[in-house]
Length: 80
Length: 238
Image (cartoon, rainbow over all chains, first blue to last red; front, top):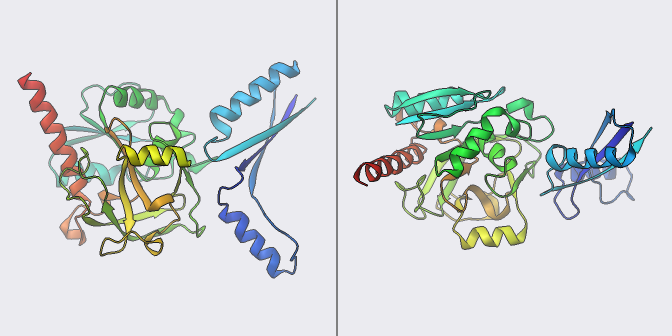
């Protein structure tokens, strides 16, 4: 099973990288781009075959290491 | 006194800390490799600056799971003094020994320069040699020093006088312009509720000798030594 994990800063937390990118987009003429947020994307393979167990495992990984839940939120999908 | 300076893969201020504590201040300071699981015989622990584990994932995020961190947590829970400088501060945050988290600097730049901090709380084991409101000039060198915590935690920290240093002007005014990295409330250093663990973004070990033109940082180490000596004396007398 493959897990595809997205980690982003929580809404409302200043994202200086997102701001810089938005500014660059505006400079290039993409005036409609707004609220640019930068995050991390991680992929990993799991030996676990049971979807519920795999979900619990990836959630634990996110909570313990992959995201800092003080400033970040995460979401993930599992594909076989 | 015996200091342990923790060495993670990627620490790069460990030698500076050892130099200040031993060569400058005349105490014993030994490097403690991150794979150690015991901190026997040590009076205080310093987590030095650097780029532990290449800052991968988040600053301090991987170092906090080093074998030695179990012993550091135990040491802190038993009341031992722990000082985290720069990356050491980031590791203490990730480890949950201090509240909050670090974000990328507001400017997105790595900033390496002298800054001024005001002593917000002079009644800690790390600031006993300072006067309340005293201004210290200490250099910073970081890309992720933009301190953040939620409103509830911030008000709890304020109520418990956990904010130890704030970025200020050379005259001691805490202003937005004096904030180098966007840190919430100009926070440059905090302590835990118990008072024995402190994290600070500026590098006192880089400003602890007259020969370098600035020895303001020395006050932090001297304060720690005072507190340790006082505790030892108390232990002998009781």
